[in-house]
Image 1 (cartoon, rainbow, N blue to C red):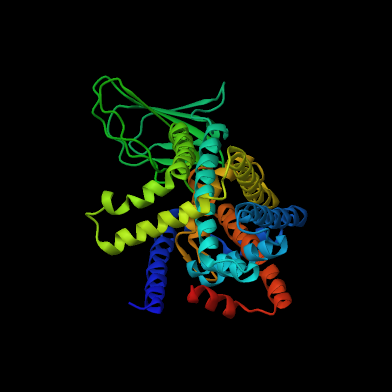
Image 2: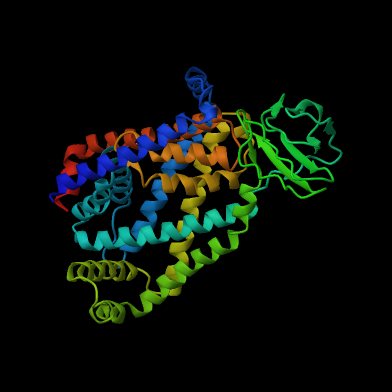
Length: 440
């Protein structure tokens, strides 16, 4: 299969996946009242000063990437910072415009401008990816650990709204944050009314001495458990209202229980990289012996991958090199998370109240969304941000959508606009950059 056919097949598969995601999202209850006009008004009213700071932090992150790349390249050549910075801008703008093939623009551009081998720059790109993968996993683990959790129960001294039994009870959230009912028969349907966005409600569903009564939860709640049918048993469940439905507040708590595992995995990646650096020659040489059961082409690809990784790791000559490269990576991801935080705060409302750690948590899901992207329009990136804001931080649909779209605009427009300036200065075009990637 030709490269062109592979690319079109990949784009078709990506478009299909995104279409299915959008189709399922738009059929959900909260999208039935979605107001596109209100969405664009909220984006237009974003605070310009915070957006300017977000763009500045975004450019600073590309500069830090250039500094780190220069550090990795030093064993081969002392490169120009402008060339490396321009390479980051052109490389990422190419990814946004032409998709994943644009990944090769950065190593191709830098190799051409600095007169070094493309293979050496590809090795640095691979090393960068490993650093960033470990960093974003560790950042996610830290965010889970430090992000304040929503309460699983209403505030101390909350009012209890005790309902008389009815087969169709109406739980009025304005009458209390705790809604309680004793089941003396089956409840065929129930309703939850007068609930405010961001309000936490705790349900106490109690069986009488006979028990075995069924209970139907309100239609605007999701994720509620099955009521315990045992005699005189009580089922407690808390949810938080996001503007369209009441969602369980336990999801983030469950994720927090995995924070230590996530952070240990990130540290393991770093230690594995160090171990490979110390034993790279013997490990590469043992591919045929250890993986002889694999087809030749797969073994050849694995050996090539390990050789490129070993070549990239040659930049780490001493422990102080490792510490310095890790320090630049920390600065980079602090800046990346700050961009998200500033964009969210610029929109005001519920997004202005989320913490820096919450923004750092969202960036992890945004990174996963980048795996499903269409050139020029994104898709997975915005959807992942919107869903993370809604599901984990309980932000309303319209507000979360504003955050996802504005984040994409800031990321895409700021990078591509600067790229056009660089292209004019360099006498290049995106078409030439695309040919550069194709020829590699």
